[in-house]
Image (cartoon, rainbow, N blue to C red; front, top):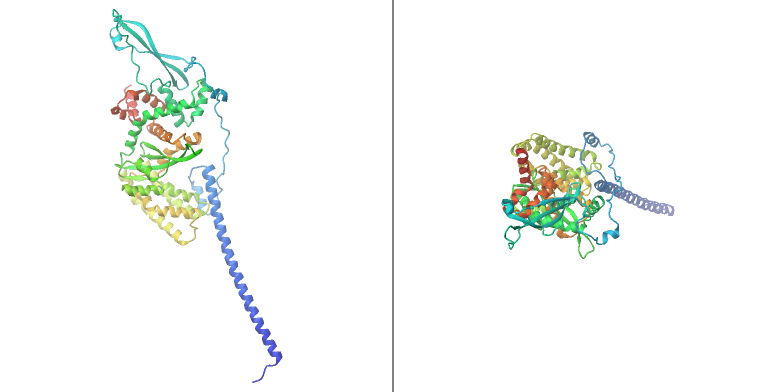
Length: 531
């Protein structure tokens, strides 16, 4: 065997070194390629997360500044299905400065005003109350004086003084007899300067017209030169709420007297003494679709609030959104829980720009469900007929929609934390209760009727910002319940409250059912027909 020469040994060593350098270079290239792939994946992940965050920011801006309507026109749906770019919602809305009512100067508002409690410049409506004995035999009585009681009252458009004159009489020929005078009619509170008409106006102004008491204070002063401090008006609101409590309880019994109720809650801030700031309380709402609505105030959102709101005797269907307290409460009480398709649809609507085609397909399927409901509503179908149509027409659509959502979720193409991913998770977790309405013809497809009953309170809290303290929350719940019941029965809350606050002091517990807005509306209609 030939012995390699030194030159050959040198070349072999160089070849071995080059091979090692080549292998090392190939390893570095492989590492660089892998690192590039990881970076590309990270970039794609960041792009997806950035897109999801932008959609969340757009949804938040839409919720705060944009329109609340979630309607889609056929043209918009076509754009979604074609994956075309749709213009984003406007992020803001210009509002003009709010004209605040003219108020007296600060020095005048803080100082106590001298003079009589009742302005002398108000017109006077005088009522003379004659005792029944004098009416029966006026020739036997001689008028020797009178007792005068005055209240300040209100009618739409202005104030007037309501003067009750009670003449004193003594029987002729009996100078030592005790004089007689007519008794004062029962009132909400003795020596209260506010008549029922004024208190009714203050309640309607705050809880229907959404005017805080400080604004009403300014309006009364600037337009009528009548100074009514907001502290006095707050006491009158408390007084009226206490008197309206039996009617409020009667409305609550009516709401929970059936086998179907819609439940929801809305946050309202209130002042917490000793903390120097506001805290969040909740106005819980129970709605009977097509009937009454009942509000109850609680300083928290815990399950105990539902236990106080819903009587133990109630049995049937409770419809709500996906808040976990409702599910646990339904299991505890043995109630049938119904979900809300409006809440389920909202997530897909908000993610329509994130995934136009898929969100558009889902929204179109949900739209078909609502089209069936609109048709049944137009035909005024009863519960049994609605159940048959839902089983025959809505259930196949729901089954197809369920498998579509499951397929999208298992495909892994949608980020779980994206808007569409969250909407799919919400719908699938709520699926069993979202199907409840199919088998129960009396149940609506969504909880929107209850949310509409909450809307007046939402408008109100934008004006008066917060409740003075926690105890005042329940008084607001009482007045809101009565006023919204008036609206449900198509009667004027001012006329109703004026009449009922006049009659309540003389009414008995047995007469309270005759004073509810439903009974009052029926009696008013009967009087109009008789006339």
